[in-house]
Length: 230
Length: 223
Image (tube, rainbow over all chains, first blue to last red; front, side, top):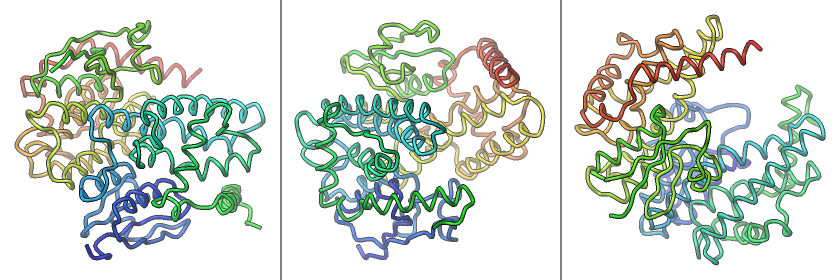
């Protein structure tokens, strides 16, 4: 497939965009990455995602596909010669989908809230909630991996992508707020999984460095407060 | 094909869409009514993370979250497929199901809970913008699935009945037949299908339920 046949509208700090990139990498699909400028939305983005006006948007043979997990499933459905992203068993697929929804609806919003927390008490409460979430995900990892390296088994799968994309921001949150979220004493399985995930060939090139994310976060927070960035 | 149980409540639109899928595929199942004010040990065991309905239990293994449940049902029982074979069509169905089956539900409920005023008008406008997207998707088609109902019809299936009751309880009109003629027609066709109709909760009970929820939410807002 010609490179221009597959385009991805995105931005380097976005974990949601990373999901699409990892999926394309797993399938060895060549694509053109169109970086959206932070703070503005391109015409192409507004045209191809009129509902949400958000990245990522995958454009395949001029057809736009939106919503990161929908995109990942599309990539899995289309490029069938590559390794499967979703498990083959319907029950396992349902479990991956369930936890992916949990990560999006509960886990990440809570984690994101830590930086914006008003006061130490509020921050502590959120850190605790994230800890509880990680404990649940550790259990899920045990069950899904069945002793293997990833939620998907021997190879990265749907839930690895859905959850793993947040690891950059998780590490940035830990550093910026002086908290420990992923703790080998509490969730040893996940700690080892995180290292394996970030080191994987499909992930390495697209996972942003923690330092870069921290810089970006500072810019973001300054913008939100209305102050000029340093 | 093995024991199937559905833990559900009659009023929940998320539960009814699962029943529709099971009936469409001719799957025999045991319906277990849950009392959400007094959650059963069964629910707490099968959905410890959210403690919510619906939960489908197949061969003793539980699945929660209505859209993953629909996908599971479609992958396990092959009669009357819900999703198309074509990847792009499947993707469109998934995208719109997430939009209309989740976001729009809460948008409509939010609008219903607001008391008369500017905020309510804005919420209604926003909810109608969502319906406008859906109108475009159904234009020229009998059902979202084409000639037969499919995944998106089930996800949007709350509109003919639940939205209608929410409108009455919330003192608002969202599904305007003049603004959304195709969607309105789809809604009439969908609710007439016998297996769809037989699963919906009685209107008076649903109205009672929404009246109570809306009063409660409004009382929180003013307290």
